[in-house]
Image 1 (cartoon, rainbow, N blue to C red):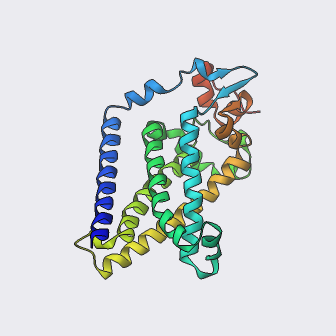
Image 2: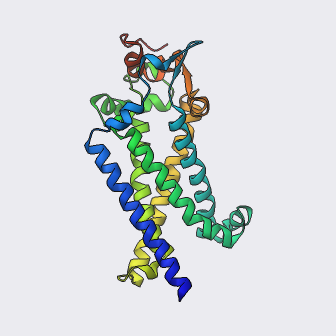
Image 3: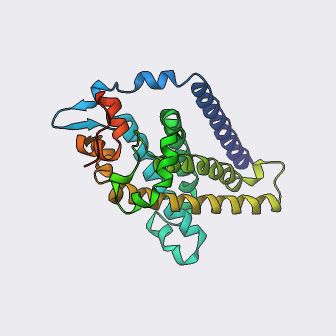
Amino acid sequence: MARQRGHDRWIGRIVRALFALWAEGTRRRRLGHQAGRRKNVSHPQQIIPHGHVLRYTLRERLVHWIAGVSYVYLLGTGLAFWSPWLFWLAAALGGAQVSRTLHSWAGLIFVGAVWYMYVMWAPQMKHTDDDRRWWKALKYYSTNQDEKMPPAGRYNAGQKFLFWGFFWCSLLLLLSGVFLWAPQYFAWHSLLAMRIAVLVHASAALFTIGLFMIHLYMGIFAERGAFGSVIRGDVSIAFAKRYHPTWYKEIVGESSSPRK
């Protein structure tokens, strides 16, 4: 009983900390993310030597990789729990008991990283008229006909969709995951609620798997050089002109150049 009460206290602290993080993120958003903007690199400072442009700061890259590594671990352990055919993944990731224990904690790390990305990037993820035109021209993007695509800012419409998809799915995974982690903590738990939590958790996870595959395609094949930018932090000026001409215009103060 003492061990159970101690476990319940830990869950309670986690839930309260997550609500506090949500409240802080909401407060910063209402203030226009002024604190976040002060930390961003100014446009002139983004021009770096050897014909390159700074795309991601060290802070942005660290948060991105924390989210990425934790998600890959969650993906592996989650699939192991979902299907007996994939249970070998749990053995490869530390064993069944270790995977079961770390899955929940990795989930909290992932949600925290996604929420931090929300605080950093949400103002830049608002949909615009250019984004609507981008969706109408999606067939050209999928066939690498970049010259027929409308100009994109720092993030194109597809990247914004991925951002919001991961953000909302992370909230669904968190809410359903906390219930599955410790259903005895909630006085209102029931068999029906458990089944709903399982359905929501699995559905949100499957949707993120689709987003993850699209993310890999966009970062490795659709925009050549994008994957390197989350490692080094910079891209070539040619990359900025070709894939994100509106963003390039904001940096150098020039009119948007035709894609070449």
